[in-house]
Length: 227
Image (cartoon, rainbow, N blue to C red; front, side, top):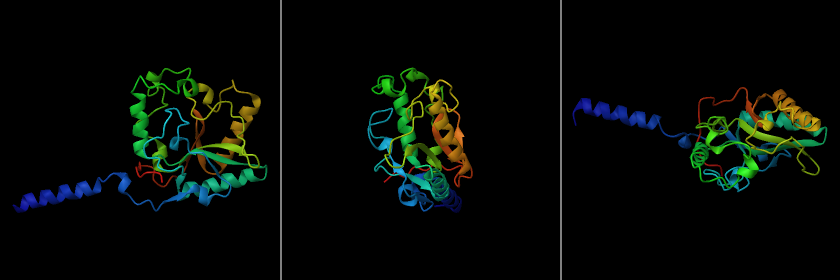
């Protein structure tokens, strides 16, 4: 092969190596949050069928909460701040593989699969899920420092009333929505205050969604499976 062609081949090979999917990247920056955070309750909805699609989502091979070390450290602070009042945290989703996000997007484009509409988007037309921001092509969860979480009674495990269920695609899920009861509003503000003081920022459309302010991988969307 000519020297020029050899050089080009080398550049192409190098570019391909550099462009390896995030699934191949080192996972050493992640930890199992259940092991790192005493008393954390785990309810990974996308590993089972209790979610807006109604089946296990691609990339969830185990009901495990994986987070970056930085996010887990911050969640320890949030958990500790609730302990004195007899409460704790329950997580519904943590790190989310990019293939899971693609699974959501493929489902959203299928107008025929509405088996969980009555439970998760009764007042929202499925054809508008992208437009309204409920489904997206990329998710901050894939960067490893976003968590979906609620507050529970540490003794009984009962969830505090937040006025709407997790993953309900409706404006009533917005933290500031005034249609929920005063108690639910207070519980939402307790959750938001707890998480923001621990270093997370909320999302105005979802009372359960929080992202670490100083996330270590702000531009990386990982795709290794949860197991």
